[in-house]
Length: 149
Image 1 (cartoon, rainbow, N blue to C red):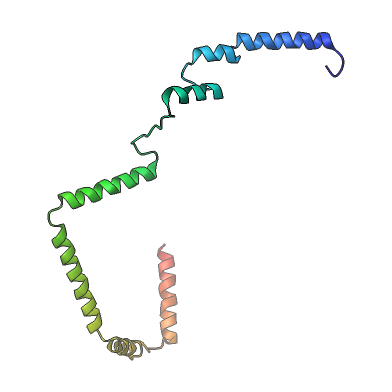
Image 2 (cartoon, rainbow, N blue to C red; image 1 turned 180 degrees about the vertical axis):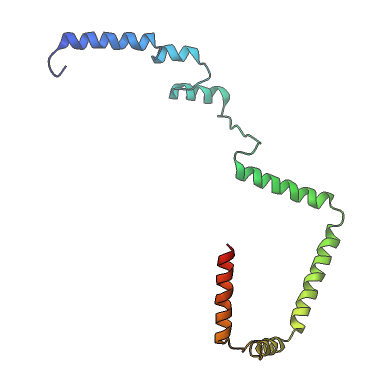
């Protein structure tokens, strides 16, 4: 149209229209095929007037992995509480064990542990210094080990 070629434009328009009709891309052709699709505001308003509201569809199944995990945890907790007969005694025994461990930790004197550690670190065996003979023995051991490989 910008170039002034009206005949070329008319031919292209006819070709476009025929392609749209043969491919069934027009709105009139698609509207009749699928009756359960709302593709205009008028149809949405008609649905609201006919039904009185737009129904909300709730799917009770989990939607993703997080929902499934939450549902599994809820089911496990429910069965644990409802079907586990000894749950109360198990909790009480676990609490007693925790309290006993805390009492044992309180009875241990930290200073005694530090003195024992200090004696171990500075004993004569720990303070033994390596001599030149120790280094030469180690070098000979490494050479023999390398020769065996």
